[in-house]
Every structure is written in C-alpha cells, then in structure tokens.
Image (tube, rainbow, N blue to C red):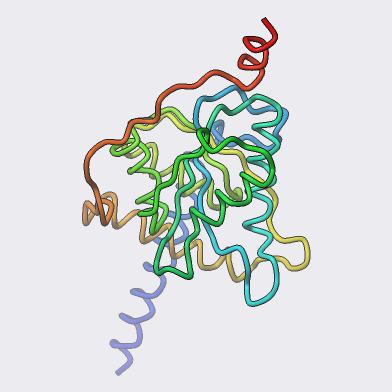
Length: 224
C-alpha cells in the first residue's frame, strides 16, 4: 500500500510539473507578439475576432464586449481593413459570428468588411481555418491576454504570422476560474498539436478574403 501511495504521489507530481511547464511554455513563446494597446497596433488587412457568448445568463459578458469594442476602435482608426468573425454556431438560437456581425454593423462597419466563420468551434479551428479556408496567414487576433498566448501558440505551430491584441477581461471579478481552465486548455492544445495531430472539425473549399482599401481611401476617391 505504501509503495502504491508513493507511485501515485510521483505520478501526481509529474502531471503537475508537466502541466505547469506547458503553461509557462505557451506564455513564453508568445512574447513579442502580444500588443497591449490599440494605439500600438500596426495596420493589418485582417483581424480575427475570436467568439464567445455575448451574455452569461442575463449579464453582458465582458470578454465579449471588450473584444467587440476593440474591433470597432481599430476599424475607426483605420488600423484594420476587415474582420474575420470566428465562433460557434451550435444551433439557430446560438450564433457567435452573427452576433458579432450584428454589433459591428450597428457601429457602422460596412457589411463588405465582415467575413464570417461559422465553424470556429474552438481556438484551433478558428486559427487554422483562417489560413486554410480564408487564405490569410498574416493577421491580428483579438481576445484577452491569456487566450492570446494559446492562440499564438497554435498559430506558430501552423506557420501563421500572427500578432494578438490583448484586450481587458472582466472588471467585476478576478477571472481566476477562467485562468485555471486555461491551464488545462493549454495542455489539451499541446496534445492536439504534438501528440494527436488534431485538425479543425470542418475544412472545405477556400473562401479567400480579398484585400480592400481603407475607408479613408474610399472617401478620398469619392471627394475626387
């Protein structure tokens, strides 16, 4: 019994060490590719906004609102020409891409600047499909910092030249539960990429995102 307890203890310590090491590695590899303010974002053709639910019960989800607010600000400052809104479309009453599109349209973003990926069921799907389906491998990701690190970890594994704008998280609570979940999500990402070789749930024909001029360039043409 004592030997069994010792073996269990060693196994537990090994698992904790491995999970911690992966968590630190994912954070380390993202250094230099995370942008902490909208003002520091360079001009990009495409920004990929990672989806999440807009409401948690009847409360507005700040993870969602901060991503959308940042996207709108980037467009208004002519830093981003167009968006790829990627998220889950689990059923007719839950559609993350369409919800994001509706809010961008309300803010004045033209419809032809919005591209939708309805098969962004998880971060790996969203990042890989941006390259494989929408034919872009040089884009800005918009999400929270902890999520940025995992998204960039996935992008790097697929030779995608991405940066990530880290927007703020909730202001009313610490987000410790979310961060704890992220630790295990990173271990799952490591297994997907380096052990299992997981690919997106759905792939298909390419739908290339065509380059577009800045809104300011359009107004200049109209004035002329």
